[in-house]
Length: 400
Image 1: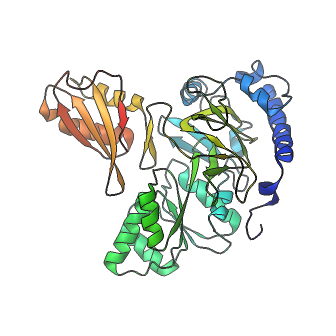
Image 2 (image 1 turned 90 degrees about the horizontal axis):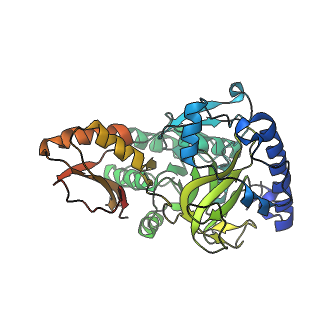
Image 3 (image 1 turned 90 degrees about the vertical axis):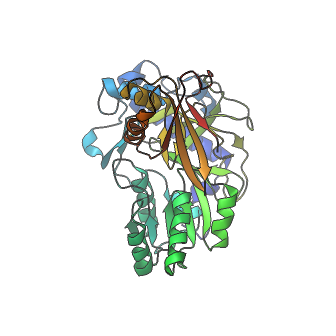
């Protein structure tokens, strides 16, 4: 670690980076051909260059769900025995994600370091320590840097303020909305929260208005992009957009195809993770972005950041909500016709509102309960007349 960089790989040349990635990728392909029946007959023995990735099949979340249902728990995609893993997660879908034992297995240390986190900084981690990996993703990165972590989880603001008073964390980790809530509550209670100076946020939208407000209150916020399957894919470092992490290869594809688009054109983010424990080739995230050239303090290429969804699934308060979940709500409450989930923001917080075609206004209670149960998020419900919703096939409307 240096004053500006986590390690020297962040400043290597394009040629050196590509050669290293190709060597690691070919080694990974060799292991996958030998141990994973899914890939044995679908992969070449080796690739000549990284552009050859475009000839390989794309793996989608829907494929992952189907594979895991047929070959529990990880669809035959694990790189070794499950006994060699540290943790086993259940994400909405459901999708089952492993965590390996290597230090900073998820790749969050680079993102934290680029945000200004240094050895000895106390980190307030407000992601959930339950079944999903976000909290553990950032705890591993903080530990790799040498930072003690407060495993706060979400909610319980009174206890969080007590922890802030006692431990004086310099770093907040979580969704941006909750950082604002904590600052508001601290100011209302007269709690000294001046130690909080850095925010590493992800999992929800960060409007520039909110970033500016938080900066004005003494917290410099950086965001990163990642998933529970891939770890941290890209992060802000002061340059334009987000710099790509060193442990991944990112392509931008035309939605619905496996074809790369020219740099600068918006398409779907597809990631190849270079990892022996859980190797994923051309994993389609469903998120949209565009490639930017290298610029700023690191030499890797960049993405513009999150630019919407290639499908209708959307992230609300750090959790993905998918059309399949809305369909499950309709099946669970008799009499439902079309449902439409509208996602908006109010008071710098994500809100969701379910419009349901149903002949009985009394179905609100049942629908509200099922919405919370199936999505793990709270939202409002409105009964509308049968046949009144647009016949446009849209199940989730992101209005943010």
